[in-house]
Image 1 (cartoon, rainbow, N blue to C red):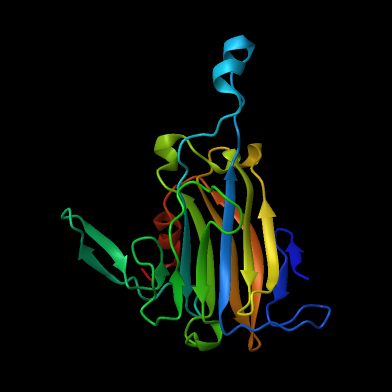
Image 2: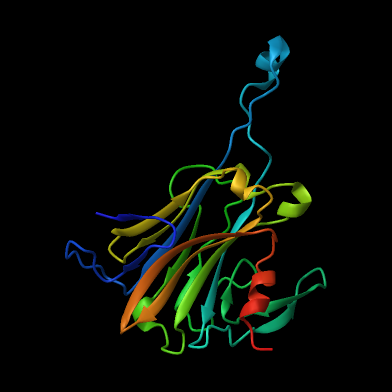
Length: 227
């Protein structure tokens, strides 16, 4: 049975306290969220035309940063030209995100981009071949950002039922960390959700839940790079 984590809690991914063991050859990190329904204005016309409604598209993006034994992202990748002539950086480096969805090693990748949060289950997934991951990677940090959150006045205070979970290669849920938006997340447009890290030859999973005002993971990445 999966463990429901609280903020700051750490568990061993290989096996739980009940002795149940998990296959880490492939681990899926699933992310899900719902946009909070807003009440329409009251009165007859509000009920007739409004009802409960959702905000327009919320684009939450999952990001994975691979850190070395110094807690730094060693390879920032390269820049590429897009079709519209823009230069996009961090391509094929140690950051997996919407513009660089697969790590050069082939051992960690992002499956896609859900721009609404609609439907049940995971809205985005990052898949990792943990047993095959090179030993120079000691930690994987998972962030979630709201694309253009500042511009669109969208923040985690408007998000309900957000979660991150770890599932083993047999489809068994190992652990889940959930949070719902409240006033403490108002104005917070990104979140350091959780991390995987090596310790004593095993992989640990830690629930973090640290919000940030910026809607760009690059602001946090700058703190994790070699100067």
